[in-house]
Amino acid sequence: MKIIPPELQFLHRPLCIPATESIKVINLSEKESLYLFSIETDSVHFHSPAFTKKVLSPGENTTILLVFLPRILGDVESSIVIKTSFGDIVYHVGG
Image 1 (cartoon, rainbow, N blue to C red):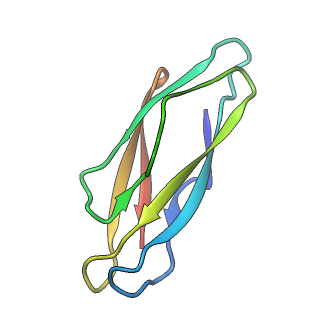
Image 2 (cartoon, rainbow, N blue to C red):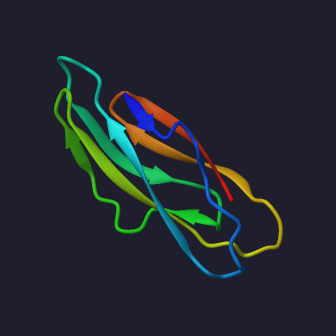
């Protein structure tokens, strides 16, 4: 499995103005399907709206939308956890 970009940094934003970016998840396996179960985070600044479970056949990819809604001044660093059939993937996000 590969995620592009390897981490996501949102540009500086005014408070309470959302920004959206996409990440691409690629199933690099030649034999196994990749199940994407959920996306979780403890951060109030980042989320993935309307995420639905997905199954990626070998070689397939999908795009996941991430939203950054800054609620404090300054830089915010966090991570999201992508729950998959290949294990939990911790993905760094910041803004």
